[in-house]
Amino acid sequence: MPSIPSEPAGRRDVLRGLSLAGAGAVLATGSPPAPARAHAPDLTVLRRASLIDGTGAPVRRGVTIVVTGGRIAWIGDDHGAPGHRSANVVDLRGRYVIPGLWDMHTHGTLDEKIAPPLYIANGVLGVREMWGSPPLHALRDRIERGDLLGPRMVVASNIIDGPVSLLGPLPTKVANAAEARRAVRAEQAAGADFLKIYSYLGRDAFHALADEARAAGLRVDGHVPYLVPMAEASRAGQRCFEHLLGLTLATSSRERQFRRRMEDTPIDPADPRAWYTMVREMERLAAETYDPAKARELYKLLIRDGSRHSPTLSVLNVVTQPAETYADDPRLKYMPAAVRAVWAESLKIVAPVTPEQIAQQRHFFNRLLSLVGRLHRAGVGVLGGTDCYNPYVFPGFSAHDELSLLVRAGLAPMAALRAMTRDAARFLGQEDTMGTLAPGKAADLVVLDADPLADIRNTRRIHAVMTRGRLIGPRERAHILAEVEAAAKEQGSAAAVPACACH
Picture 1: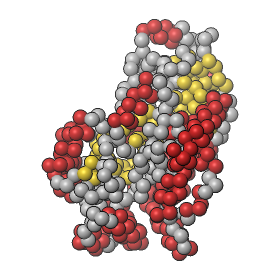
Picture 2: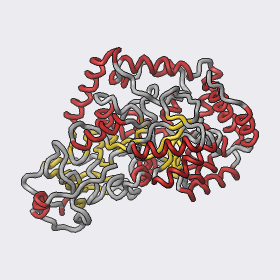
Picture 3: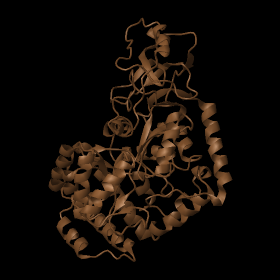
Picture 4: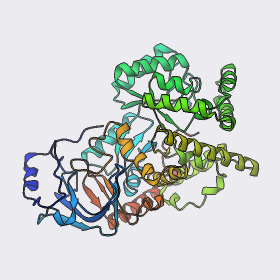
């Protein structure tokens, strides 16, 4: 991700003119604030807010935040706040300010009239795009220049999979170690921020890829390859595991038995989903044979290696429900007809139908929720991602679903917020500039009408959003949502459906 550039000398004069008297005043140190992005005013003062800064510290009441040049210049008690006659002053009494959210597993941002503005309107100010391409890099450049309103983006490589893939011809397919190494070098040359790997990557190819990635300075994230045990993948360098895939196997007393069957069953190139369906059923059965002692050893290993899990509970929850559950979801008005049609057909492939299937899938999902709680309590890093643009996982909106599901899994509201703010920034190596709210950091924040620590669902009660120092108030936010709704209607059935990695 591009770093925030330094402040030009001319803008420093604005800060010099501020009155900095008063106890609790903190002036930014280190590099000066960055130049303002398009449409960001020179100086914004947010007064009398209740601040949840993302560090885990208690709520601070009556706080004033001064923003200039796209960064936070000052945070302190309102009575000591600096003032300036040209400032845009906004009174936030009774409201709560949190850091901008990060969705750490997304697809479909290329649908630029739909996804980028929906992220911003929902306070999702950064995304980790999990299927990279040159057009995504170009889109990110436009956002960074201020030509397009959208979130900060960290962009993966093209998906790297084995010679047979659930995703057809789209991924980069590697059959051996030499091909895996070439794929890493090609993705590095293409500017990938990290490598995204997939389920059918072979064991030898995985180890070669991890070794080459280490030499190239690229992180390896994605699906744990099913033929590679999770502990082995973590030791080799995989740093984020998506969707909880492989975790029930890795914590099962019957893992060896399940793995023998996987290794003895060839993948049919004519029907690659059959092998995947078999493995998913083994994962469901493995959840019933959780071994606490085995799990503790795995968790210790993951912590030692610095490996995280991004559970993507939003998409996992969707696929446990009957397909008709989402037919009347009011958020569908923001999706083009072509996307709605693909979602409806795609969900029919995996959704439970009979009462027995529905009960079975809900039970399995509850087991997965309990695993997320165990990971968190053990100290394993958990990152909040949605798998957006899979069926009924909506850009921006579903980040708030994810927060609620993380709390349902056993995280306190503060911990859930950190999973999508501070912890995301730390994982991305961006903690010096974002993820928490402090002087010198990026002015990416969300203003809420109610306390999210009292009820995590209050993150949905968005009053305003500030992205790169630009404040989007209630009226402009409503206008953004109306424009997205209109764009969805205009696209109609002819819309190009963004590629996604459906389960």
